[in-house]
Length: 518
Image 1: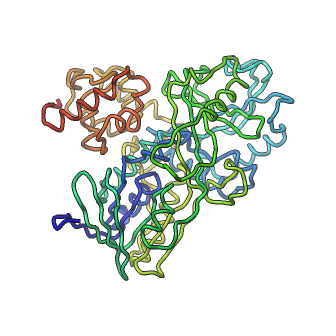
Image 2: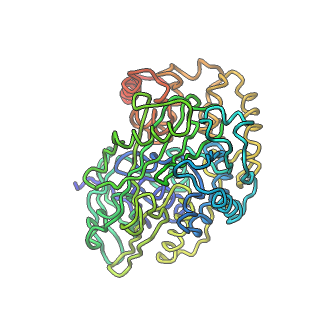
Image 3: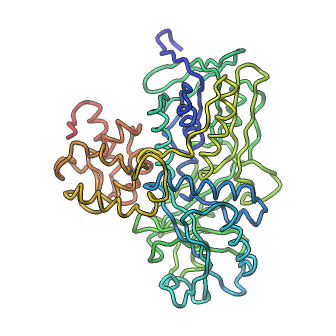
């Protein structure tokens, strides 16, 4: 660190910009703590953008008798739906059933599981489970004829990468400093504070923090060793991979496909023209956590899962995109990767000096509760007794009908969009729909200076105009094409070859001042 390094004094330094780190930073900042969050790459660049995009209780965890985890996740499903109805929406699932097919659970088991799923936690507005005759329903048209009925239940869909960004945005608006592309290169523990050296595109930063939070995800174990808090912790690293293929079925429902090995695979409607299929669960070594990709065997497994259930057949050549992420799980190493717990665990350490909190495990659905419990510990340790608040607060853009989360925002989302269509009548309908889903009430900030389509600026690639790209750079930490095309949006799926090159060229011109944004 040079003499010119910037110095920041704070209460809490959070290392890790995934969903857990962003959630903790948000909660802590909202309780009046001075917070710094650093992430070595982009927000949600790794595990937190590689999920199945679901806010769900985890129906399959009932088979493992993890009733506490399911109850907690179901309760959080309701909270999150109301706090961010633009990026989270209800999704109906169908579980096709064929008598005698390998891997099919018996009907009594499914009915019992769905009864528990309906009643383990309060359900304000999602419809209960039921059965569907696939012979009489359009939903059965794409499925093989052996499937005559399906069990139906409700969960929710989420734009996972945007969820992380919104949590970080809320943290910043409540006073947190959020530093992306900024690596924590060294930490030293003292009796009453941590000293940390950060290095990022803005130069070196020296942080004095009263408490350190290790939310580094798959890197959490090795970070503890780097922090001098003992040897690296052993974690169960499990890779989950997904494929995206041309749309397999009509309708806005999802399918849960039972497999001969007892696992389940989701087939989810995705970005209008596609179906998202996943996930796998395979153990992963920690040799290279920065570059994680699906294997040919995983691709084949997911294609076979589809081919067992749908009339159409797919193969590796039909895959238009794939992604993979490594989840740091807790639990017994002796079981299968798919049976490892998706719950979370904290390690609290105050014996060696300044407080240290490490987070292990977790899932997107329970991030808010995890953050709340983390700050419930951090606050008193630092002498701050401030009550929890996030259960009664909207995420940025989610305040469709006021600042307090309410069921109306979920139930009347379409009515809210119709009002926006009247407000921005000049905007093409498809673009307005995407903007509304991505930005919610922040749509007004995005289009603050726009009165006609020409005011959007040049179309950099299909569907991406200069106004939006500039907004993502100014407000949402976007710095490169992948940030914009794959995490802040999913326009990469729809763009022509060379799109990333054109976006990066525009960003470079913007940095030089050669682009004038409307």
